[in-house]
Amino acid sequence: MPVEFLGIAATHDGSEITPRSGAAFDKEYTLRLARAHEEHGWDRVLFAYGSGSPDPAPAAAYIASRLDRLQILLAHRPNVSYPTFAAKTFATLDQISEGRLTVHFITGGNDREQGREGDVLTKDERYARTREYIRIVKKIWTTHEPFDHEGEHYRFHDFVSDVFPVQQPRPNVSFGGSSPAAYAAGGAEADIYCLWGEPLERTAEQIEAVKAAARAAGRTDVPRIQVAFRPIIAPTEELAWDKAHRTVGAIKARRERGEAITKRHNGQAQPQNTGSQRLIAIAEAGERYDRALWTPTAAATGGAGNSNALVGTPETVAQALLDYYDLGVDILSARGYDLLGDAIDFGRHVIPIVREEVAKRDAERAAHGTQTLAAVHG
Image 1 (cartoon, one colour):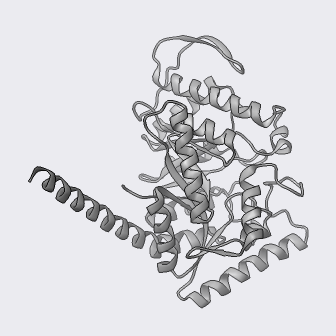
Image 2 (spheres, rainbow, N blue to C red; image 1 turned 90 degrees about the horizontal axis):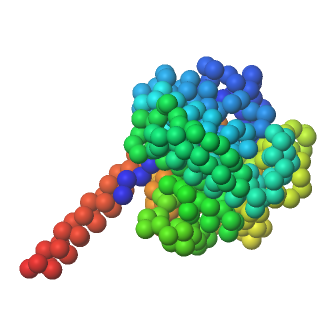
Image 3 (spheres, helix red, strand yellow; image 1 turned 135 degrees about the horizontal axis):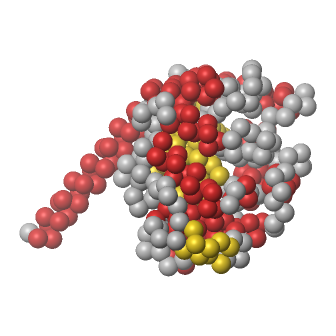
């Protein structure tokens, strides 16, 4: 199966190790970073969502109108707009990008962050709302006659959109989470299910949980699996590990100075979301796993989002990614700590290795399948 690479579409140059140098929305940097991804072999970039951050939809439209190939993964929280409005926004963006949009729906794992924009539902209520929201958006994208909706969270009458996506029957829906409620919602509705990088054994368990949820929802297919990492690469293993330790030192130094390196936990000592709790537990159990997984980056940020690293030479990191591919992961998400420089280096030195090895695996499977078919009919 083909492999795809997802990068980050940051709107400024700040990261966990360096404060941003300008405004929250730096138009020139946003375009420069996206263009670096397009020119160095990446398939798509994520426009993330935060309560006080620049609106990702117009930022994505800005990039889509200026680049020709790079695909867009747009993060969206259902609490911030009505589904009828959102479906039109997404369809318009798919038109602007000429069919390069995927929408990532975020249920929200932190009550304080959700409350900043007026969301007072409990976590279980949020998951129920997200499922209803996704179903409405899908129907709007594919229905050309007016319809009514009477649901638990949304009610409207006689609605039909006049703008439809380029992609037929509709753009893909992306979803993430590590709790049973997340598996149930994403297993039922997602085309792509997103996980944060964990040890191989735990990732395999999560993939099975997603598949089981899809079967329980009556699906005959299963979501594609995406896994996210923070690669730290250098020409030699020694240099890569030196870089890794400097990275963690920089994260800790910013925290000690009282700088807000991430808004993920919003000042709370322990994260509310299951995914971050899992990352902290994994870090407490050990620093190194499998071929190259390293947890101190996650520990230093308190399990904030995509934060487990893959450390080593490009060849080592590529082989580690292939280990996940062999589990059934075919979308690999990566984001460095020097956003621009790391996107270029990863694109130059890691992506080609992974693509070449995946092509070899696919060719071997095809040859084996042909031989097996010939034996059956022989």
